[in-house]
Image (cartoon, rainbow, N blue to C red):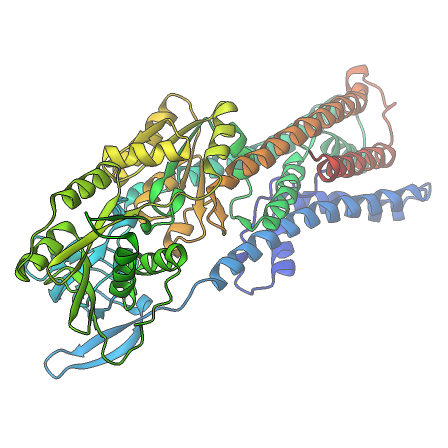
Length: 622
């Protein structure tokens, strides 16, 4: 007997009273199937009380009915509790962010407000390191902006009032100076309609089909009892009981409950590996995926370019370049500056003997010169792009060496970023900055490709950089200079030929593809907007885990096959029970089985097979 047939996943966070357990049961009781099933038990118990020939078997029927109801409610309760815990855990990781809102521009009056309170037309200040909370227009200031979350391109862009780029987009990051901007929209208001998740629509269709099964089963039972009543003269009491017996026999089995339990169990295993499963159904869908589209910046790489090598100019030692690089980066709090300092200290054992001296003068990065460094004991130590350092040394009476130009060109051809180091009028050398690929990716992706998966790298970088990173990761296919629409088109093209697609990403430029993919895996370093589109969230931001996640997904499929075999056997036995119950109609006699006996055995069989399926879930491991 299926107590909760037709009741589907209840979103715990929508329970207005916040009481998961009782709120969930209360909503379950609103199900038509639940009402009819409880009515069955009530009639069976109460009616037999007035039957002098009734035996103790009726109380057993009632108890077994309660056990089945409890089992079904318990499975759904734990599933909803799991989803609520995931939602609460994700929300607990959100940090309250504030900005300085300018209330009175003329008198300079300002106040701190939560970013969620930003309204269209508000004027506020963005400082270095701030994440842009909404699309806005620059009304004062010049700064460098990291748009890698939108474009996938690691290089910063220049934004300024009245310039070629005079606006900032939501989700981008300010990496230098400060800006005064005017909000173009309310916080979180601009959302592209193409992010509508098709999987939500599919899920609603599935629930609709399940509800139709329940309704059809009730209609079928009513038709049978009407036919039987027409050919047999029996009283209303017996008619009702026979109707209830047939209803119990043909009511659709809620195997959906067992599958939910299976996915819930595997979801708990993923939590052990610091992975949150927001959409339980996605763990099953992942096994059917054919193509995996993976973002580069922040997903395969760490997002910020790091120093990996020093190339000295002619007649200059590496130690001299390293010491100048350390001094020029000692007061540079950008990720690149910190990586240079770590690199030279580690490889050249520099202790920074000059750092902290009173006569050292830090020179912060400025858009006017586009260089940074320090002044120390008459020496002007600077680092910056080839163009900026060339101007610096020429202004001091020097020239930019040809060999450094060649070094910079080679680094650029490899997809890296060259930074030149100079002291006064002399260029000492060049530092090679590159995207650092996370460990273990080549081995992991090799496993996936050997298993028949198509791995595709997507990046906003140029083809040369894309090819370099793809080779390091062991990926044979890549999409360079990819825009958010390009990624979405790729997903839709794959789906149009029947290939299920997974998307792995971390930035807002991945949202369109994440929302429309069959399965979306989001890195833990993503912002909350991006995480909201993820089915699976890897809090370690380690794409090398993908083969492990897919392995667990395949285990779900194997377990489901075993469960389905048990269910087929169950269907055969129940079909025989239905035939036995309907046989008296065909034979036109009253030799039908007693309702209490038939119902009890069906309930006992249902309970036994449900428990057997759950044991299969728990013990069927790799």
